[in-house]
Each structure stands twice: as structure tokens, then as C-alpha cells.
Image 1 (cartoon, one colour):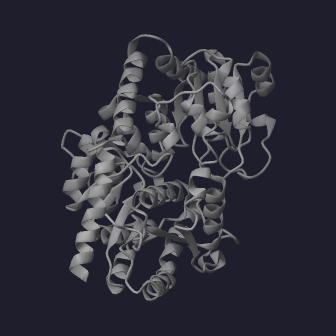
Image 2 (image 1 turned 180 degrees about the vertical axis):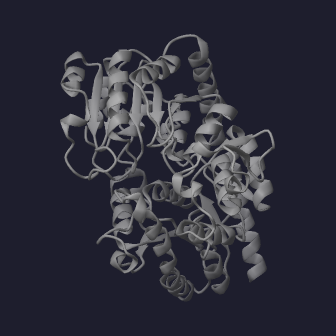
Image 3 (image 1 turned 90 degrees about the horizontal axis):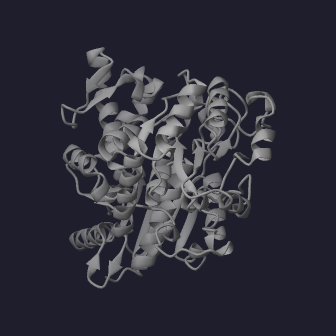
Length: 505
């Protein structure tokens, strides 16, 4: 399949959890098919992508084929703080402004695709756009190409998210539990699994006015790419296929290939996976690995709420007290609690008195401020479980290593991901949901012990997580003519594009 003369234009949404999988997809398409890839975003997101590409040794050789191009954007025009082009550190009340501002990118994006078409002498092979930029379908049609929707989440979470926004079923019943169009009747959702702004949505609010038209437009695309593995999400994939009535290509996991290699090495340097997020961690990977080396196999709990989430002050205090009471070793990536400047200094009063000092002294805990080398931590043999917000990138990274999850969903589709991890996969329990919940030290201790202790439910979760890890690894293996499901899906996707190219010419 000759792809070197073909060009694919990518349009991710302005959030780190979207930019990273788009870059991962760009690298895979470029390496496998030799396409020229142009990722398009606003100036500060382009700067972030350039930094990430420059720091990633596997992408360095592809620099000439993976380009990033800027679209003009002024956050102040959209009621956003100066230099705000990403969801990171943005208060929830202003996140909807960021979503709505993305519609203003349509005209400059159309001009850019037209310029590429003139320069190349033909339209791009396709546009790959985020599920939140449904307007890219109109751009593709006007430029003589097709638009492919890329959902950076899993099949189950994506299907639930789209169906909830399109139908708002919780508004119709007034019940705590409700059925969701597209899902089996036996699969009930609970009002506490959906975010407050979706609970309050009535179809006329700012959130609905953005999501409903954009998701509907995305359902008119050529097909959908999904950042999952077909074998691990049979129900979710079946629901998504029937709901969208479109081809769905499961091409995940879009995580660094070194996480999926079966080779293990004892050398410290060889265990460093690389600066995957383009950020400087609050503690070096080397220090993390040395700390993990001190602990026995599968004994450490890793705690992180993702790139843009934190918890309330009272929740943070209860979590700290429960961790200490459990006696289990842990690495906790911590940021100031909700309502405080996420880029500001961390105050000792947010944790029990002397907590960090005691954890350092006893070597029970490693408290990491701001960022941690998550990939290296999850790949280490001492890591036994992950207390997570259930963002999809984190889930795939964890399950690829066979690490079970303690769920604490906070936003977006995380509540549906958590439900699926418990009910469909059996790899998780849920500690709590959201920022309003009240948790106790005892509940934290009990949840940790359930997952970490030998025997019982925790043992079953570890076994299930290990099996899913094997399925994830198998999906990206290639041995002669035998291809894993995700590699085959990627090839099928590109074949479908070339068939369309033939129809256009």
C-alpha cells in the first residue's frame, strides 16, 4: 500500500487527553504507511505538541513527516483568560467557553486544508477530527475529501456519552436509575454517574447547545476510529456500532510501544520510557524507580487523578488518613484541592499534620507534586493497583500492564468507564464518585485492602486485569501474515480510505 504521497490532516480537541492519542495515532499511521501527517491546533497547543515530538526519541526520525500547524486563536475573544487554549487548569465554569470557542476554528481550518490541497495538487486522503469537532465533516466535503471521527475514549464510554447528550434520558424519567438508548435494557445507569452539568442539561443550556449539534455532525462522518481493542470491549463495541451505524475501527491502544514489549530489563536507564507527555515530572523517573525497587512485587498503590483533575480538601484529608492507616506503600500524585490555584504552591494544611514527613521517614509513601512519570510507575513490577479518575488513557496504560483499578470518576465519560470496568471487565471497584461525596478514612482503607490483599475479590480483579493485559498486547502483535486485531483494523481503515480516493478521482 503506497502512502508516501498521501497526506492526512488531523484536528484534535484542545485538551491533553485528546492531544496525546492524536499524536500516538499520527506516529502509527506515519510509521506503517509513510503518510505525511499534519496535526492542526491553536498556537499554545502546537507549542506543546512540538515540545512532545522533540523530546520523544521515537518521533524524532519522523519529524519531517509529522508536521504541526497553527490556527489563529485569541482566547480573550471567547470569554477565556489570556493564553488559555486548553482545558488544563481551567475552572469548570469556563470549560464550556473553550468548547464553544473551538467552532471559531472552522474558517481558518477550511483555509488551511484548501492551501494543502493546492500545494499537494490533490485533497488530503482524509481529515481525522475529534468527536467534538463535528463541523470538520462540512470542511472535508467542501475540500473533496472525507472526514473520519476519532474518539480518544473507549467504545463503551463513548457510546454512553453520545447517547446521554443526544437523548438526556435522565430528564425524562426523573428517576435515580434510567435506561440509556442503544444499551441493553438490563444495563441501567445512575444519576450519580453523570456530571453535574449533564444532570442539569435541558437541551437549551450552553453545554447542550455545543454537544448536541457537534456529536450529531460526527455521526455523519465516513467512519469512526476508536482508541480501544476490540476483544476487551465486546459490549461497548457492539453498542457503538449499532448506535452510529458506521464502520468502527478499533486501533488502540495508542500508548508507547515500549509499554507493550515483553522484554524486561534490570538496567535503570532501559526502564525509562520517555517524556511521553512533554512535561517535566515533579520527581525524576530514576528516583521513582529506585523507590519502587525498595518494595515487593505488586505491593504499591499508585494514585493519580489525571492531567486536569483534583479532589476537594475534605476528600484529600480522608484519602491521606486512609492511606496511612492501610500501611500499604503508595505513590500519590497530588495537586492543590478544588477551588485553589492548580499552579500554586501546595499548602501543608491540606494534609494531616506531618503526613509527608512521616511517609518519607517510614518509606511508606512517595508524595509527588504536580506530575509523575506514570508510564514507568505502571510498568514497574512493584505496582499492584491504580487509584484512578478512570480517564481512558490512564485505563489503557494500567490494563496494558495487568494493573487493576480503584475507581474515583470525576468528569467527562469517566463514570461510564468506571461502570464498564466493574461490570463488564471485573478489574475495578469504585471508592467514590465526584467531588461532592463524603468519604471516610475507613472506606479508603477498606477499598485499598480489597484490591491489594491476597485472596477474595482483589485476586479475581488481578487475574482479570492480567488477562485483559494479554489481549491488549496480542492486538498489536504481527508475525508474518498473522496480525493482531488493532493492526488489522488499521490496515482495513487505510484500505477503505484508498477505495474512497478511487471513488473521488
